[in-house]
Length: 121
Image (cartoon, rainbow, N blue to C red):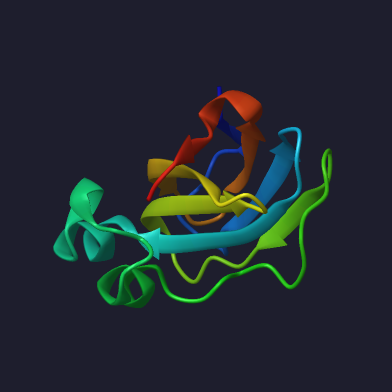
């Protein structure tokens, strides 16, 4: 199952070091990261990520290019807090990971596995 690996626990100071590791069978085409409070305010689990409201809540794709199988990509995190992640593959399947607690000064790797894909239409 997809999981957040805490490489180094946050000490309350410093930047958040965050990466996504693709352990699925296909490349990741897009990746989004948004504050939990923002997603909840826009509708939470009922929010259609492909609607105009979903686009506004999730913001832009954070990948410059697809992340190949077995590859890792650093993702910028503007501040510590609770975050939601959304990964999309080339077939439009999505993984949504909720309530990622990212602390200042911490180092985190989000490992995405094949069993987490879902199709949202």
